[in-house]
Amino acid sequence: MESTTLFQIAVFVLGLCLGSFLNVVIARLPRGESVVSPPSRCLSCKARIKPWDNIPVLSYLLLRGRCRSCRAKISWRYPLIELLSGILLLLLVRRVENPLLLVPQGLFLLALLAVAWIDLDTQTIPDAVTIPGVGLGLAASLFAPPGLAGALLGAICGGASLWLVGALYEKTTAVPGMGGGDVKLAAMMGAFLGVGGVFGAIFLASLAGSVFGMLLIARGRADVAPPFPSERSSRPPPSPSVFTGTRSSVSTDHSCPDRDACCIDAPARTPPGDGRIQPSP
Ligand SMILES: [Zn+2]
Image 1 (cartoon, rainbow, N blue to C red):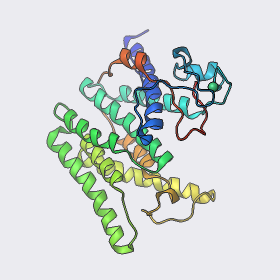
Image 2: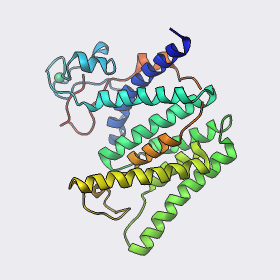
Image 3: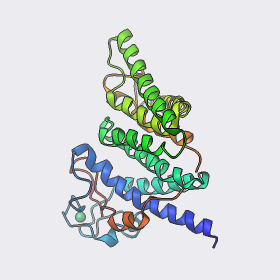
């Protein structure tokens, strides 16, 4: 097998492991809990999840989507997020050759995936992801495109443009527009993508969001809502579509984060939301 193929397989497996960690982040971050401890347990029977029952995707398949101890059902979203993470990193590594770009862009994509899912769950965008994300984007720009000046400009323009749109909307309609989370998310995207990239991503995200909204309306799942309603639960959260737009904007080249550490230490899957949600293996 070619070394390139082996490398891509390794990156895909790494993505699966990081996806397992994302499951923990998505579940615990909105609740203000540590993403490191305690180890995951089945919410139904409280049994601690054994490492061999916590292998991304594979354990879900082997256990047929049920807890080994109590046979309670495990949500399909855990293997889905793991698979998405693996696929994202695989697509990235196939497009990006510069090792200096691979790590920050990979982390950026995974951060967007977590933000999108948390936004879907809670209609909030966590500062704990976006603010360090701005810092990471600026740090990465010191040795990779778009460069520090481009990243700074991108962060300022991205955040300011969304803030401005929200403020104008609020001024004309007296309905609150963009939340602070949206502004910080745009700033994070700008820090990674630069000015052209962030505006391209926002444009694509708007398109994706519009299509998503129209699909919901067509299926009778949503009312025709203003673009930035104050009650975010009444409209599709923007960050999943922002994620879609940004994924298309991320381009170009590098190697993965510490593969061994993430696999050994990847926290167990933790069910999202409150205790009603199915246990994880
Ligand atoms: Zn159980």
